[in-house]
Image 1 (cartoon, rainbow, N blue to C red):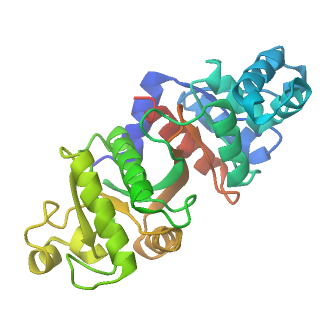
Image 2: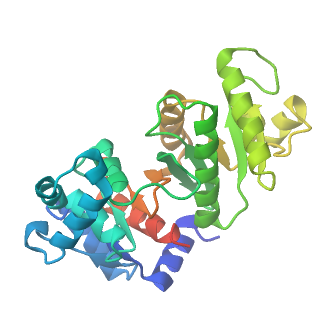
Length: 303
């Protein structure tokens, strides 16, 4: 059976998206470019020096128009536009690239700032969050939020769940089955943290009734059919969730690392979501292969 990433690579080859890799001074990025181009996975948009690129004035004007209400002047917009990460986001915003992948040498906050300044949020999802795609052979799980929102409230959990559900379908072609996770299953415990998750799950069901979802659920009740039969036999997920929404960043970040290290899954992310166009972050410990893999995922997010 084909690995899930093999199928995504095949889709990327047929699409040949234009993907900007702004961190051209990083040798890992240069190696990733070679991998992507040799395998014909995308057309890499490569800019050695934004200050010498003829598109810099256009990016600066775009940035100024978007941020002048915040007091950004033209001279400061030009200075910001010359930063490689901001320039890359500007190329995506202006249609010179379809998507961008960066963060190997920049903090997540810098990547998000560039995305918000140049792209803004997607319609109906007024929150930037992140997800991880966990891949083990043909099995693919989506975890969120594991990298951006520290303590989401019920409304934010709903936005995170919806963005992740949409991306899970893009990546896998599967219908998303969303579990809102807690240390309680269907009232087995009472606490303010449980109430937050329960409220988020209820609001999500109302807002997205065609998406299979449930909560609050413990992980085993969401993932193991036999446990679900004992703990929550009326759950629409029946222990077969594929999208897992964690109650806070502590839980999500710990969970993806445990899943990666102990269960043998490959973790891709943090994949930023909620922006108007695909603009994806990387771990600063990433390899060239990781960068190429995230570029393949950026291509899938265009569908």
